[in-house]
Length: 74
Image (cartoon, rainbow, N blue to C red; front, side):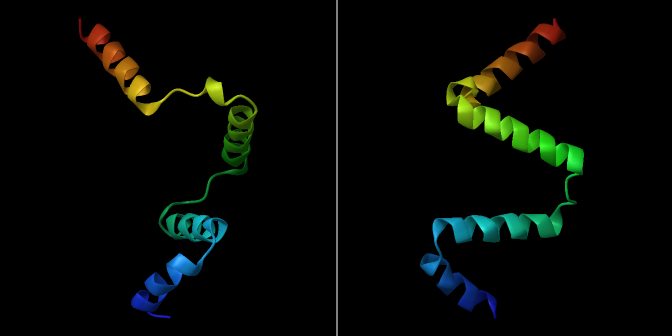
């Protein structure tokens, strides 16, 4: 299958199929996680699904990190 054909097929895929495709494409370029790291990711994801309010929005995380860096620079 050539690239253009693959791109044309994307809209026909389900959300889950596209997620699998994306994950596989990323895996081709990145080394796989160790079993321990994979377990940690799965545990943290399960914790988040159990309590979504436990997460921090990206903008808030950036604000906190900037503040921490500025405090260390003083």
